[in-house]
Length: 104
Image: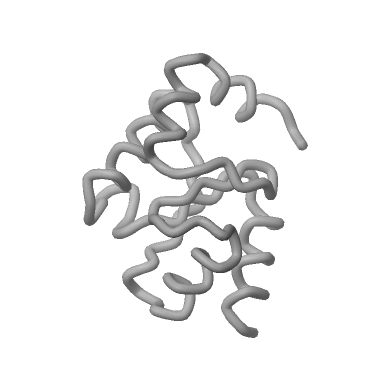
């Protein structure tokens, strides 16, 4: 399976998918740590996390898949949400909580 097909399968199969550097327990950059912190503060216990540092094809593929140049990237109910800054804004406005509660 190529990177695009793998990514499509991941975002379709899990309600919350975070492409990040490291893991939720051991993030490898501040932006990824911030995304995990926000998701946990929003009550998300089951984060399907993909460590892009483990697979160069996924690391590049996710940028092309979303047309978004940076990591982390969050998908909720199969839809691209954004990166760390967007998550911060959505968390502060309450928009993220609403998105996480409602299915697509």
